[in-house]
Length: 277
Ligand code: HPA
Image (cartoon, rainbow, N blue to C red; front, side, top):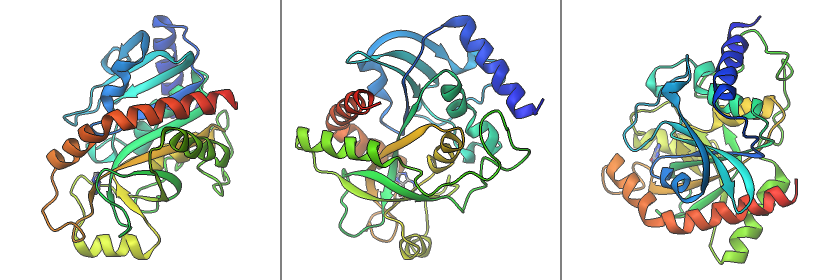
């Protein structure tokens, strides 16, 4: 068997030994947004270090566990803390938790992250619905022998972020009167923030926000037929646009400030997306 698939199967076995919870929607919480998981009706949790072979996140501000439970009656699995490529894991490990949530039965992957704004119309604290992405600065998570059990060798990526799900997020934002932006997310490796020239490049190639995660997860989920959608929290304007040096502290402060709105927007979006499934 493909070793990547074999590891996935053994992680799934580990999870299934602890819970038979059947999620409909998988949610990944980004930097500073992890508290959301504590606010849902929790049924079960599994620390990543309880799952043999599981990549463990090392970033401060990221907890490392799966939370199983209900968001207004919708069964969800939440990753409270994700794995980043800059931590040194191979891309197949970075997307292992995403694939695992798909294998647990989740039909939708709802991605969230913190990012730097590239679009001059954006402001720190804005939310951006991800319309598309540029992932060419990181290796594809699909490199290597294809896992035929999950999806095809050459998967289509013409609608990575599912249009119907995006429309549900916009409808949720409208209903809650929360302004949201729309745009293209660029994934770079990090962990350093960008230079002003790199930020100019990201804008020139069509990006609206830049970050260090998410796009690889969206590819892996799309490959295995999950519907993908996501919201990026613009925690700062990107380097060179912002007049002050960037820091993880600023990222966390902005994420904390908008957390209550974020929480409402994610909850309402999940309810609407699940109702339309
Ligand atoms: N660049 C990359 N990643 C980020 C940023 C940024 O400006 N802000 C939050 N995550």
